[in-house]
Image (cartoon, rainbow, N blue to C red; front, side, top):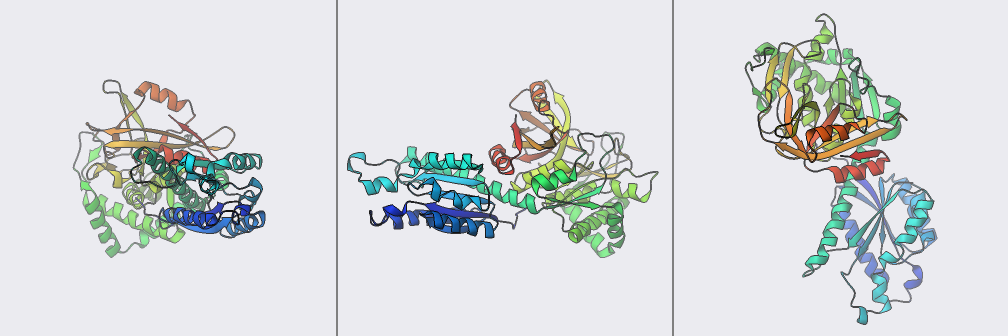
Length: 487
């Protein structure tokens, strides 16, 4: 899974009312100290903070807006220190038109009401203007979200501290979503070959992805790969063979009649193709790849297409997701899951088990071997079912424990749409057919889950990742302004 070098750019400004400063000595400095702590914590979340300081009048808000626009921030954080009029807040977010996160974080768990003076109350008065700001943003069509809670944990206040923990967890999820938003908007995804013929759910409009995700689709020819495969040196191929041996168990024939031994010739060909893929990714500066090519009568392109699984599994584990069958939408879902630290293995529905109430899911294409339960296996296959060619394929289960599946589909109106569900990868036997396949148990029984999932017009592929990721996915969908269904 990739440790991305890309950081979210987060614009931060605090707010207060200039009229208060001469009236209450030390109030401004106190709020500025709180804001510095907020900025420090956000910086620690793999984010670059662009601070506009404490904004206390409309001209300062306009300057903040110019600052955020000039830095092309991904998310604007409005830290509410005390009451401020909405007219001195709105200009700070209108220039960039980025999503806004309003932080309603009170420094005190509770005030000592009989002994609290006006100055102390104003230092805890962040909740006062949050509804007013929300109204102004809503009427100005500014996308915003509010996080309310306690500014920081306080010793001996166990009950109150849950409000600090929850708030900062939510803030971190928003920052993560903003980082992935930035990655998507700067990503370059290769489309190699064509979509599997007849899979209507796979067909995708490249312009839709450019427009709604900000990504770039680089259309590639099989000739682009062939040239680089042929140019691979013997030294590079030998090194790739050792890499493959270190990552995979090489298996003999399984109980499937189409399974074969992993021969030296098949291993070397997969390694050569993997070297070509590495060079293709480097030359075109790709962050992901989707591919398929049918080939004909054993020609060179058929042989290339049949040799891609091992190399693309290695790419996927490096954070360059590779989806088969020309499924561009799932490639983006895999990229999202990988950047969440969840993996994101190319997966489809295999079957329903009505005795133990789980769904078997997997694919004959590349797997995210970094989230394999145990060392993944390579098997030789005498044919790829439903496809031309033969060669090596990956067999693995996803790690046992909590999982999330993320699908990317599109609506009749031409909008991208996300679907997600959480469940568990459970122990038990799987098919030894040279495919990834895992036993996944969801909150609904298999029949009801399939009914509900299909209600939303999904594609038949998903990105399968580890951990519970739906709360982060919800925030990303909000930032992307995409519909999300959680089953």
